[in-house]
Amino acid sequence: MTPPAEESPVQKIPIAISSCLLGEQVRYDGGHKHDRYLTGTLGQWFTYVPLCPEVGIGMGTPREPIRLVQIDGGVRVRGVRDAALDVTDELVGYADTVADQIADACGYIFKRASPSCGMERVKVYTGQGMPSTAGVGAYAGAVMRRFPRLPVEEEGRLNDPVLRENFIERVFVYARLRALLADPTPRKLVDFHTRHKLLVMAHNQQGYRRLGRIVADAGSGELGPTLDAYADLLMETLTRRATRRGHTNVMQHLMGYLKKPLDTADKAELVEVIDQYRSGLVPLVVPMTLLRHHFRRHPHPYVHGQWYLEPHPAELMLRNHV
Ligand code: SF4
Image (cartoon, rainbow, N blue to C red; front, side, top):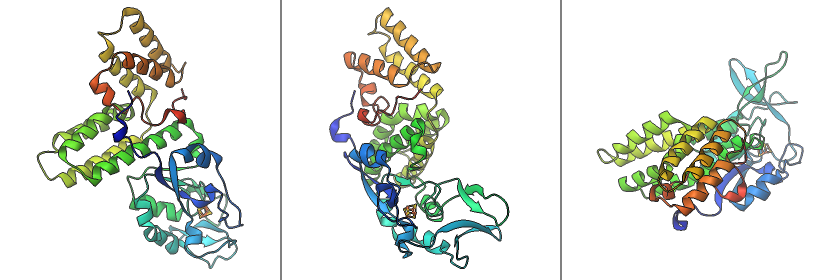
């Protein structure tokens, strides 16, 4: 069931990260926001590229705290105590300064709620009443605009098991996608797509069909634009969360490959377990484990090549959610 080892991504995948999450004392008050899940559990699979934009633009530590402020229809990053301090352009420009380091990464984990690093829902002060939470950190926004395919997430959202699995799955797919883009041929694109079909199908049927059409045309034009369109749509499609309905469809599809080898009792058990997952009674790992078990006993070449049944290391226990 496990795809051939030589085609697996390297064990440690480079991930850019807000430095304070690794325990580096770079926050405005000289503190840090060490996240043990990131350094402990994920650190076994990821090698981190720490980046602190506020230190990077020369603000020093400790430093004047900053915040997002709504001014004249735009949002600026200003000092909390010193309103004359405006570091918006420097923070946006820092995304260009470190672009080469980010280009080597297969994901980015941002510190939530930061006026520099926050990915979403950052407080924006208007000068009157409660701040809105519609802001994006100035640096994080620039990174996401420059690298729209890059899987991004915040450490707070990684506490949600579904979002966590979604991010880590995207990181592993992105690592394989980068390997394809580094040395592409039409045939390799077809092979890549074939092996990711069921994974994509669990996320979004429409994206799945559109990706299939792009690949079908791969031999008829220039490969570069085809690859760009494919890579953009693939990463966009995987950003949508795989739903229980999507997983149920894929697992029922997989059952079709077991029709002949399984006896009536085994088939009935599999149908029941998938239905229990569909109803929210058991976590995804339960039908997945049963499917893997059956495909180990009754291998099928198409299913064997699919990343769907093992999209990330089992040790991360990412499919324990209902
Ligand atoms: S949130 Fe970003 S800018 Fe703030 S300390 Fe952490 S890495 Fe530096």
